[in-house]
Length: 216
Image (cartoon, rainbow, N blue to C red; front, side, top):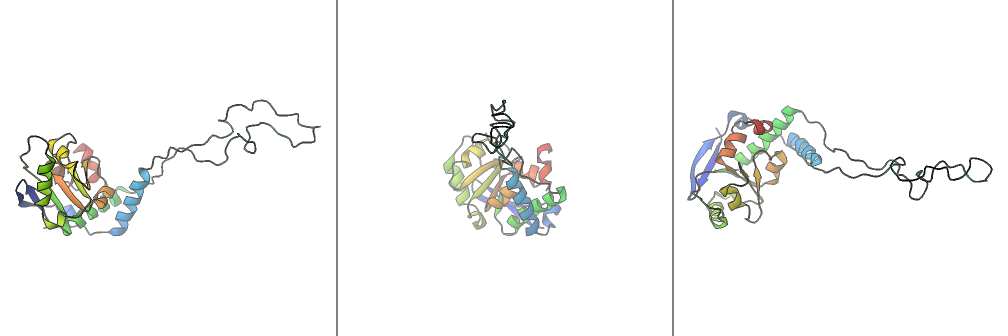
C-alpha cells in the first residue's frame, strides 16, 4: 500500500499508509480538470451589476406628447436609447459555478492526492516540539524534508489557523497555509508540495472524503 512520510523536528521519522480508497484510486486527469474548473468558477465574486430602465432614477413623465410633434414617440427618458437610460442585457449578480456530481468530486479529490503520494510530494508534520511560533524552525523542517517536497508553492494544511504550526509556516516564501475545512481539489493541484498537520491529515485524508471534512 502507498505510504506518506512523517517528518518532525529532526527530519523524517517514519511513514503512514494511506487509506484504501486513495491507494486504489486511478488518477483521472479529466475529472480533476472538470472539478478544478468548477471550483475556480465558484470562487468568482459574480457581483457585477448594471441598472435596467426600471432601476434608473427619473423618467416618470412622458418627454413629449404622443402625436403632433413630428418626433418619434417616446415614453421615458430612462429608456435604453437615451443617454443616462437603462442598460439592455447588462450583467447582473450571478454564480458562475455549475453542478458537479458528488462522486466526480470525490474521485477528483482522491486522484489529486494520489498523484502527490505517487511522486512523494506530500508529507505529514508531527511532533515539531514548538511552544511558540518560529519561522526559523519551520524553515529548518522544510529544509530537512524529503526531496519530493522541494517543489514550490508549498501548501501547509493545519487544523487551526491560530496554532503554533500555522503561524510558524505562514511567513515562509512561496508557502500558503489553509485550514483543513477550506481545501479543495484546486488547492491540492495548486500546491506542488503538500504538508499536512497530523490532525488535519486524519480528518481529511484519513477518510478520503473531501466533503465530509466539516463534519468529521
